[in-house]
Structure formats: C-alpha cells, structure tokens
Length: 270
Image 1 (cartoon, rainbow, N blue to C red):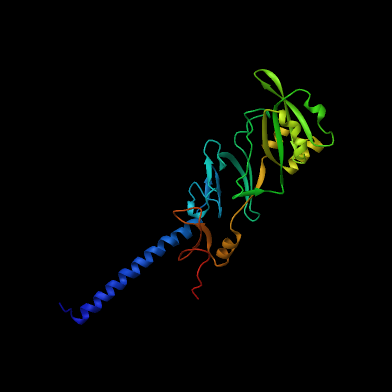
Image 2: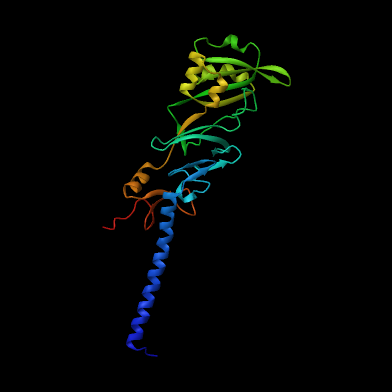
C-alpha cells in the first residue's frame, strides 16, 4: 500500500522522535547518577557529611564509590563504621585530599584492659589500604611463660602486663615494630600473638612521657592510606566528571558525567 507523501514524512518524524526520546531517557538516567553523587551527603545521627569517591553507603549509592569502601551508620551510637577484612571499625575522620582514613576498633572503645577478647589482629587489605606514615605496628603477646623477660634485650622497646586466665594471672607483652624477626623469636613460646597498628604520636606519648596508658593509645586507633586509581580518577575530575563505578559492578571504575557514564573521562563536546 502506498502512503501519501505527507504521511511518509509524519511517519519519519515519529520514528525520529521515538529514537530521540529513548536517547534522552538513557542520558537522563546517567545524569541522575551524576547529580545524585554530587548532591547526596552521608548521614549518620546528627552528622551530614559531603563525601566523594571512593566512599559510599547509607543513602549514598554504590555507583558513587568503590567496592570495599562502604560506610554504614551505627544507629545506636550515631557514628559511621567501615568493615575491613570482616572486622568493624569506627571511622573517626577521612582526609580525602590526603587519601587517609582514621579508624579504631568498635570492640575496644568501652574496655579498660589489654586482655582477650578485646583485641584482634589487624591485617590490611593491600589492594584497598596501605600503611600510613602516621601509624606504626606493635605486637601484643598473651599467655607467655614466666621468666620470659629475663632474656629480652633491654635496648629495645617492650613492656609487660598481666591478664587473668581462669582466675590466674597470665603474662602478656607488647613490643614495638623495631624488633627484628630474630628478636621476635623470644615470644614464640606465647600462645596468642596479635598485630595492632597505633598512631605514632600517641605511642611516643606513652613510651617517652607516660602521659597516657597503652590502652588509651590503642583506643585512639590508627590511620591508613586508601588506594584508588589515581590516573583514571584525575582524568575524570579534570574533564569535569565525578569518579564512580558501574551500577552492576562496584569494582569497575566509571567517570560519571552530565550526559552519561564513560570509561575514563567526559567527552569534549566542543
């Protein structure tokens, strides 16, 4: 059947409008991602904080951040937490210009003793977090034999403490990371060995000035440097985009732009 000429033009116009509408709807969704990440703050209790990549969580969507950097809100205590290697930590501060996060163990804040089960070894996820120059590691040993300290080098930093094991005092020690592997062999007879990062400044106050206890040092937590793809994120930001990730895969980087999501940077529309 032959359509009149004007009917053919109308049909072509309708098809174009449908295609254009579909195109705009797709970009409207991407633009929504851009504005959502730009405007949505992380809310916890009375606090409302403007975060940026790689952090997300609570009311801030996963595509605004990266897997491994989800923040949650402890509604009972009104503070943000992050889970690293299945351990929960309270977030004390995030310095995004320095790519640094300051955290402390959530299970330690109400305790006044170094004795188990207060502490857990902290082993870093090296793909997401690295050591910070503001922190150092101490080693904590529990259930050690009597007389162990007789053989310890006096020139190195260490101290002892007591814990009760079934009502009986048990020997514990902490040593600084300056101990060599050979020197740490002194503590192989201890039954429990833990690794605990601490702030260098707080630890110096403890061992040099005695102005705080080791428990207080541990409660102050420690800092970590967090790791992201600096090259890709810088290229994205320099093109007026926001660093983010895929809707369906928070491991994969995407640059969120006003007109869509792109692999590295926003296109130059001239």
